[in-house]
Image (cartoon, rainbow, N blue to C red; front, side, top):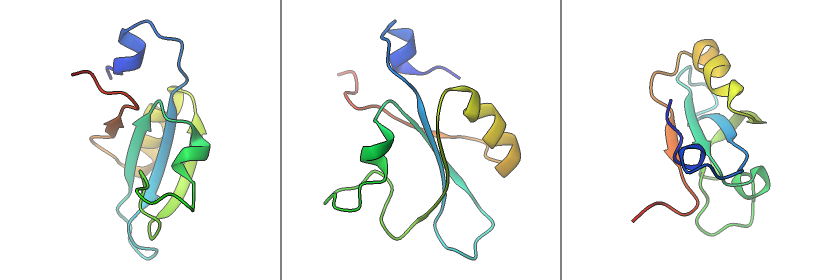
Length: 87
């Protein structure tokens, strides 16, 4: 998987979050980002990256989690979110 902040040779950590849209749902979604984990789970944010009503299942730092959790939760296409996207 190509991550834009790693291709630019920037020394930014990769954060991975797996969440469900409903507590009883079996479908999981994944976000891969260079935005810090504290900002991802900020309860006071007016425009959160992961909506407040969603249930965060896993949260970790490192690109190795992408492959591991994709297999574990059967996620085909993780969503990539950049803090400062290229124009």
